[in-house]
Length: 262
Image (cartoon, rainbow, N blue to C red; front, side, top):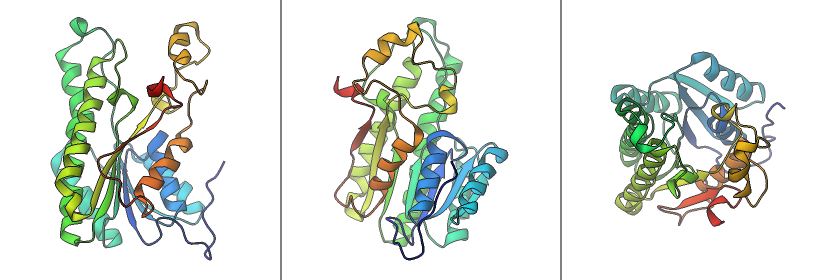
């Protein structure tokens, strides 16, 4: 279904704000970019694949929103710095950021995992989050108006699954960066928080079958009895990004169907 933007007479929750979304070409990132635009934000998305990014841009523009794509590898400092600069060049400011890019590397028990996958996982998840925070916060401090940053931490920032030590460790570290940055910059009215999605039907989960016998144990831990859609995560991220959450600093909001409460 094509995204629908608000009518001109309706004020969105992010009206007049400039928002940055990493990994905006698919899955949760795409859903959040669309939701931000629907709520009135001018959106910059980034990713490695231009075709996927431009698909998101096209969806938003067709619905009447504003979105641009910047090809970027968020594990590279110079490219992240350029991404933030390009956002400011396009929209004059940076008010909101959703640091979403991250890839799963390494399946196996700890003794069987490789150092190569460890480095890849940490680069994709931890290094990218640090670099995005660094340059986003620098820009927000320069503007002097505060801002809102949301990191995608995953339910695995609160628990551990077997055969996924690299990813679990990386997501725990993202939550650590979230809390540390929140403590450092709350006085500057820069709110840094994390969203912690559970099992979500994204391209990264394309092969996941909730009815398969091998997934029975995981599904039994979801009180909601089903997996989420990216849109169900996006609604929470919009709230966290908006002025409706002015006292939220260093929080991790679970959107996991009750998984971490079980």
